[in-house]
Length: 278
Image (cartoon, rainbow, N blue to C red; front, side, top):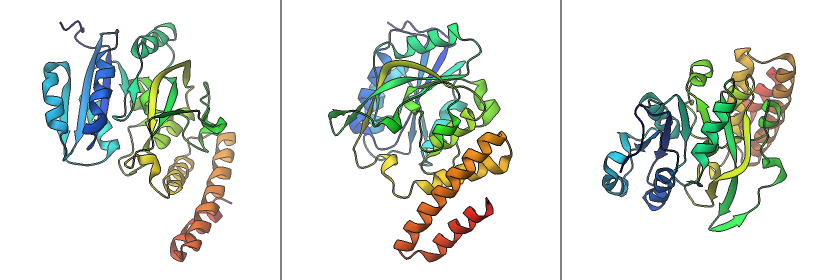
């Protein structure tokens, strides 16, 4: 029996690419939520495995959008374009939601009508075993721009946001093959506070070979994001100073790594970028 409301209050978007081995658990964790005012959109980003066959039995319980393989940013953006909810939530296809996730976040927005984004705490599982995140990964609420410069402190699977936020800061950057979430959350956190529900309501699973965060040389994408944010002129004086300091340090570290691998032209490019920022 389908108890969902139409139009939905929340649009849930799962991007996926060749993740048939774990996708069913992600989908089922959404469909098991007691809050029913949602639509679930799965964006199949050109999968070549059994993903289409796996999704077929769900019928009208989900909406499936299929596209040629264009990356996770394009998949999420396609889901956003096809969604109808005032609130939007994401779930990576290798993660899971715990019971009550949707209900708690919808209630957060009811109680905080001025808020544009919130996330929940999370449990980490690596290679099937529970692990504790390091202190530097500790989630924070409020104006979190400066600590977010070092590394991504917002998890897509833990986020819910108002649709209007994309009109203010833009969508996911489809030019970035990784760190696309880091890029978006910097654009958000330099302007708006991020709410935090301090209850773990997602299971973040890692350790598998196709995990995007395992792609080598990720700092070059973070450097690109910071440099563009500085160039856009949207930062306060204090934010610009903090962003410049992190940019220069990341450029130096990345350039040193390039020199060790005898990629001298690339090293010089990042040395020059660092010099451009004083």
